[in-house]
Image: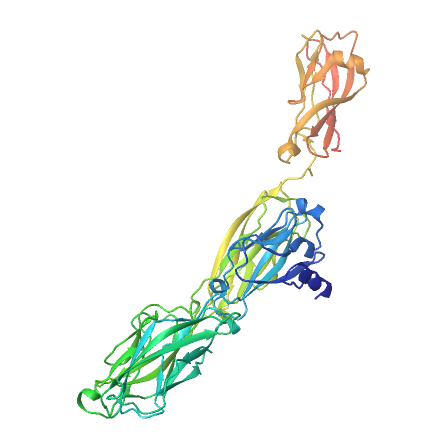
Length: 567
């Protein structure tokens, strides 16, 4: 990493970048440019001077046409300055969720010559979300016979930010009977647990109103508050007891809705109504893909599971007896990834034409491979089907470059229908194919060729002026102007001034016309050199030499016309 480049980035603005040159292709160099910016930057904000960081001068910008090749247009490049600009809202939470590092990776494309440059922009979190409870109030029923030290899991809050900007702690409003401790789940999220400090006496106080506050450590810190209503009930000697404090289970994401996840159990040593237990979710306002049978404690899947959407769930359950006493447990559910996403091939920066004189190893297009699965299920290999003069090179993870790998000849093949197949490493593997037509552009690499190696010309004397006496024809396999042939007289054994009064040739058709009536006694023969020339740049041509022989009105011998080698 070049320290000078880092210093330039810091001098320009808060975001910094770290250029890293990677010798992926010879002789061209692909560069990796890294920037770091805060989320929620205004549209049009400058991320960095991408052109300068790639070593482009301002004078080069009109021809290099630097731009961003990306599926999601978060950024654009200024055509005037080459600066990388923010072009749409950058919400880190929406883009990356809870991932600790939020990096947007894309390719910058430059033309003349065509090349791709890997760019990554790290989006830093700002404290733009406060912790939020799933419910604004919670109700607890606690028996007056509950012993000090009993613990009660309270409703937790959720914060979309990460790091110090995320939820850090809970506080309970000051009171004599309850204290609060902060607990942490296996996934790192925090939840509050309330502890009974001294015995309750329903006759003295049957109701407690408490405030639970969740806050983060952002600058400035943000917080939210939920109300806790504690109802003190008559003595109920025993509260329910779950068989486990924490239940853990792993589920495949292909599990059908209605499938059993697990069954929780709880017991109560009381009798009658006080021993009747019902189960419920502690946080009823939280959206969950699971259902709970309140009588049996059986948890089933309510909707389909998706590992790519959410990998784990932590659910608090309550067991409540007939006397209002409750117990709580935590159910931690891990979702296992399955190979249920087919890799997709996305072709970007495909040119309209690939010129037939394109050199070997020239970059043609950028291929992006997308597979939502993880691990081996998300690792993808990419290949070209069939024998074609192209190949695929790896650029970065799930990014490939299509380059030329053979001689192109438009006259032999004017287009190639190529098929790119992406296959993951799942078991069984999944694959998909994408086809594209590559059109080959013409260059003037073929000279005109006369259709005949010799021409037989018969001319009768006293011919009428303007009559055609011969026609030559040439063809050119090139296309467009490169294949358009015109004809002209380029040499003769007659004087130039005299030649114009004897013959002419049509540039379009190659027909040779007599400009006057010929007298056999005065002129027996003369020689012309005719040329066929295409309209390419530079033009290519070929010559043919007709020997014109003037004959009497009755048939006589003919002279053959031989074509010269193309020049």
